[in-house]
Length: 135
Image (cartoon, rainbow, N blue to C red):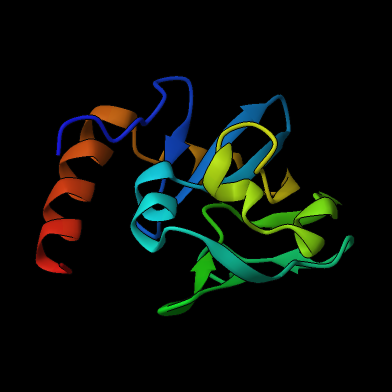
């Protein structure tokens, strides 16, 4: 698995999430390899605007036909915007995980946490080994 489509302009955590940093805000979403593995998300429980999160706390719950789970936030902060169209069509994440499939925007409360996120090349290695052992 070498083409896992992990854009270099994003940062990642080891919970299948990506973060695009825009000044003091981070746009959060699910990485493409995880979206591809489950084939199609059928349900999503979105976070609430104004919700405060600590790094690692669940920010989204997702279900596919043969999988369900929760993803931990890569950063601490306050949810400032939620991608509401995903509620009616969570499969947008599968079609365009880095574009229309973003999940939430968070106002970053601890910039130091940004430095602990992982770049695409290191994430690629982790994803390959993790997905291989979870086949």
